[in-house]
Every structure is written in C-alpha cells, then in structure tokens.
Image 1 (cartoon, rainbow, N blue to C red):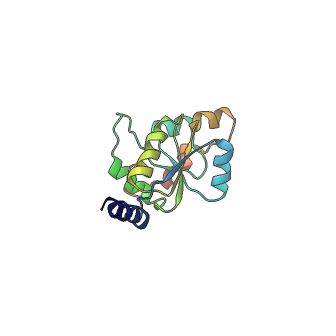
Image 2 (image 1 turned 60 degrees about the vertical axis):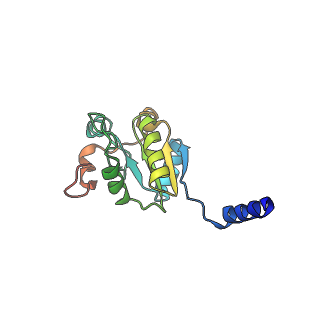
Image 3 (image 1 turned 135 degrees about the vertical axis):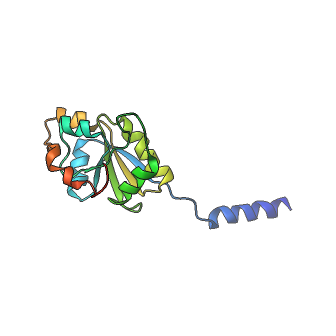
Length: 150
C-alpha cells in the first residue's frame, strides 16, 4: 500500500506542470546595452522627479513603481507594464540604485509570471557615473500612455 502511494505521488509530481517562475537576473550596464540593442524593453520605475534630475536611458518606458509618498499600487503598475511587455517576453527594470528594482522584479517574477526579468543591479546612478548617454525627460514624456500617469 505504501509503495503504491509513493508511486502515485511520484507520477503526479512528474505529470503535473509546475508553476512557472520568472528568472530574475542581475545585470550590469554593459549587459543593459546588449539587451537594449536586442530589443528588450527597459522600464524605468523611478519617480518623475528622478527622471527630471538625471534623464533616462534612451528608449526606456517610464512607469513609476513607488511614488513620492512611498506608495506602491501593484495592480495598476502591472497593468502598465503589461502594455510594454507580456509575461512571456523578457523585460529590463531600472531604478536609481537597484534597490526598488529588486522588489519590482520579484513582483513580476512571482505574481505576474514574467518569463525573464533583468534587474539593473547598480541602476541609473552607475549609468550616469560611467558617463553613459541619457535622454532628457522632456523628450521621453510622450512615451507615457495617453490618459495615464507614469
């Protein structure tokens, strides 16, 4: 009886599909450039004030994750992200230093089922310190979907 139960459990574990989890990969700026060139979308999760202060990586989609009051509206944020990349597509997330993107990456991975999430581990701070090009905020505002707040 015990042998039969073990066999049934083994079969079920092999036969039933396991829930998919995204792979969260920390990347540096060189890898960010490579992935951007390959067409992987970049989502800059900082606040509008931060975008204004430092500019953004060219081509980034601007979707604030934690607002100026420290509030996260995860369902609204995920809806906006899904307008940029579907869960079966890879996506890059970037913030100021890489701290907020850890939480955002986990949300994409564990709750939204994104296939592959790239976390820019040192964020925009390192991008700017390395002298890499930035696009001023004024030229990127048009990227926000009409009628929404980024």
